[in-house]
Image 1: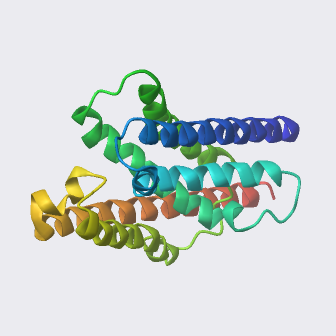
Image 2: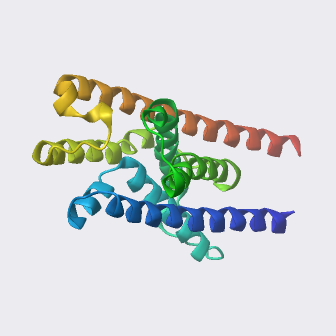
Image 3: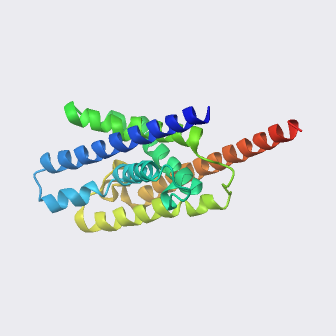
Length: 220
């Protein structure tokens, strides 16, 4: 049973790493090839998307855990709290895109494949991996506030860069069109969603921990 569990974990990690890096490299190629702007600006815009940055985190987590699969110490990217935080981030990527942004454009060909990988397949893969294979007994409520640091720094970065370049990666943070008041309000709502999902994941971890404790006591 344990061998099957480990094999399943390794399959998820391999699929996640391969699909993740393929999608990220393909998206980099597409954004350079399809934009009549300097390559440096295309690359900068590429790294301005929360989707891209978060999928890089996901791919790094999958790759790190795969390469260090049989080691006791797997590093920061394999820690349960890190994986829980990344699960929150990639969940928001999937939720926001599929509920709000999916209907704003119609990608074709390779762009369609890449879009589905980054916004649907990778979020589902990572959520399933976290649900099935990641320990949850060490998660703490206080950690949820620290998990907001990454999206907060991202928000500051894109607003600062947008004020200089005029480029905003998402329509709901477009200051030129919406103004700072509406953008900050939209950002606040997203932070609330992030915090809610974070609390939900920690709550799930606590429930799993209590359930295992009860089962352990019932054996004796």
